[in-house]
Image 1 (spheres, rainbow, N blue to C red):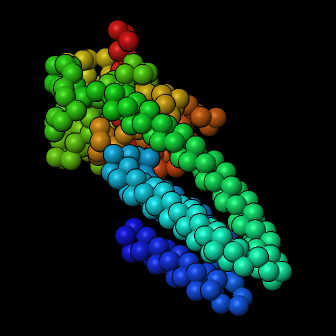
Image 2 (image 1 turned 180 degrees about the vertical axis):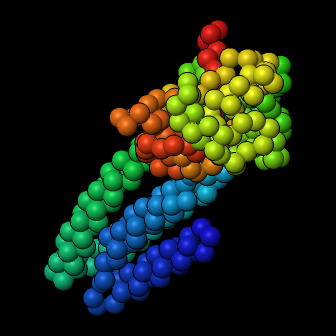
Length: 308
């Protein structure tokens, strides 16, 4: 996609440069250097926008290549614009130098006019360089942040096996996910129709309050209390202290969730153990991050790793 755009900008700048050169050898010169510089600056920002247009913070690894392609377009159009402007300035200076040998009044007047134009072009070039430099600084800062974010996401979560031992990131099956920053361990949802299937729905029920066994599930009673009991009985990832997380704990996961570790999370409401004002639990929408009161929904259990 970037190559046709680059060719378009480059071809247009070369066409404008040709107009400038041809007009210089005629009676009336058309100074196009500032136009070329502005086209280059436009290409710079077009490249940056195209690079960021489809950037997905949830999938940084796949988003970096198109971002770099956009930056490549940005840099090349800037370089081409500045290069053509310098080239035109040199050509015009050499022509004026050759014409200076005649030293008549008309030539001196034209030389002064061209010198003024050259000064104006130089000022435009310096201004363009200033803006480009600022844009490059911002791009470099963005890339540094992306590098930090990629590193953090790569090491933020760890996959755990059925015994609670760490697995390599390349593992295709895992029983739980450890958040190395908060110390929480989260259960892994499946798509096999079994106990931990990510599409099962549960009604909220705890200590005799709520609706018992009113959801749609397999492998356990279809309410939050029944599901917690079933998970602890099976000792998922080797643990038997799983619990329904608070709304704040769910929000801490939603804020930095990485879909590579939680592929079967639904973009729907997840129950918490935190009661709302009407004595029903707070739920968290995993698409918007909003809180809402409800009688049930999806469930994602957690436990605290005391060693972190």
